[in-house]
Amino acid sequence: MDAETIRRMIEAGLPGAQARVQGDDGVHFEATVVSEAFRGKLPLARHRMVYATLGDLMGGAIHALALKTLTPEEAGGPA
Image 1 (tube, rainbow, N blue to C red):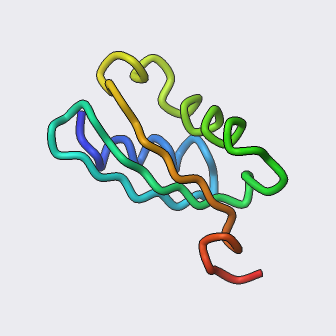
Image 2 (cartoon, rainbow, N blue to C red):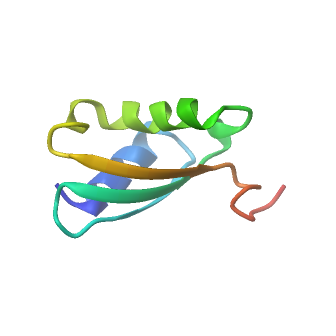
Image 3 (spheres, one colour):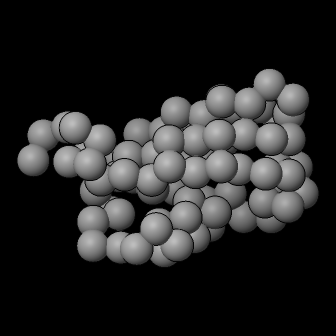
């Protein structure tokens, strides 16, 4: 598994999202995901939304994924 594949899957699963994914060992990754879809949602719900885009890869090919989930405003983007 690689960071670019994970980024593409997250962005495909959350239309309009922007994701930055890092991870060099192929199983442990960190991601920052900015999406309007996170508005009004608690962190756990946001994380579940991202995990849903990755399906069965979580806990398998992706051993760990540290997430930072933000709305565009929280990320410093336009209001």
